Image 1: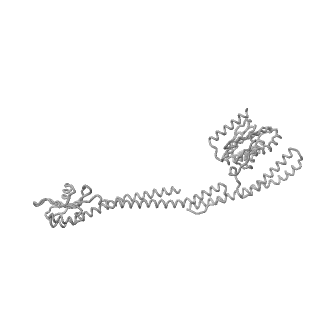
Image 2 (image 1 turned 90 degrees about the vertical axis):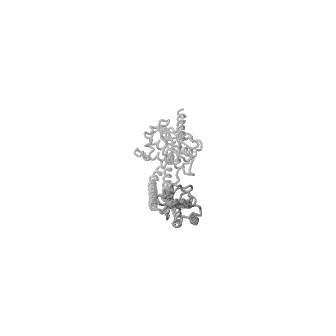
Image 3 (image 1 turned 45 degrees about the vertical axis):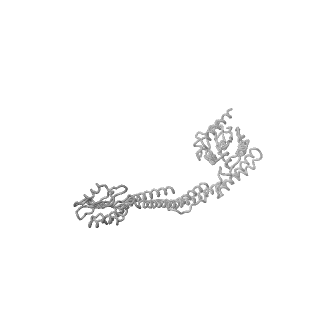
Length: 462
């Protein structure tokens, strides 16, 4: 906006300067020419009284020498022959004879071209009736005397006007740009989670109205988030009563693997509910996955969660395979987020595949990314694109449609993504691409993903 305003003012000022400077420059040139020839006419008229009295050469030479043009050798007097007298020529003649004859014939002043300038031809009637001509030579430099200086001054004034208009436009642009920059900065800050970002309500009327609207929107966003946190806390708090009853009932189950698993699950569920309540009550926004300083060991998290789900898989006669977790694999994902994503995927396996269906978790690590593959031997997903859409599974029995969305958000927070395909086990394969450098995957990286999957299928089929 700033440079656009400067360009507009520059163009308008240049057009105005050109529109006025060119005609004014031509007028100055014409005025200088008129001034030179008017001076020549005055000097030629000074010889008229002498010619009306006498035509004596010596008298005329003294009269010519008394003028400035005559003293400079730029004046001549031409008297034609009459009454038996020979023609008289006083001074140096520069005009052509044809121009003299034409001027004598029309008996009116004229300007003739001469070497190095112009000659003013002033006819004067003599007592004998003949027409004498006074010639005043006007050099080219006198015709254009002062024109160059006037043009330079005019050009300087024009340049000064252009520079001044650009400076004024730049200052006006700054006055307009600063509120716009503050508004853009506040919008970026609000997008980064700084809910206290506000914009000073100053500047031009339109930007002031935009600042008022932005501040009102930010206040409403804060209020809506507060309401959401309160609602999440209230809903989570309501779960405490049935959890307490469930925890008391699990105490009477006695000993045994199933009883221990049930009590552990209840304790974990109660801890998760407490975490939700505490998080919802906090006013500060939580740090998201992929932010600097957030990370965990994916191999450790997968081993821990697979220990939990393997016990349930054993009860349902499911075969479980885990690969690639024998060495640390650091990922820029918060540990709770990775746990939630894995539990969502593995929980879907248990909920949407029949008992006895095998599943596997594979981890592939590279220099710039980590790939987590969760595959099963179930019936597969008929519409992968719809499954990845938030809430798309809410019309299915026992599904909220948010599990895959949780996984997708976790992956995209690092610059990766989630893909759904067919696994070598015969069912669904969900591939999580976690970007280690938090950049959007390029075309080359996508080709690398396909290579990883082909290697995986080859090794599995082997």
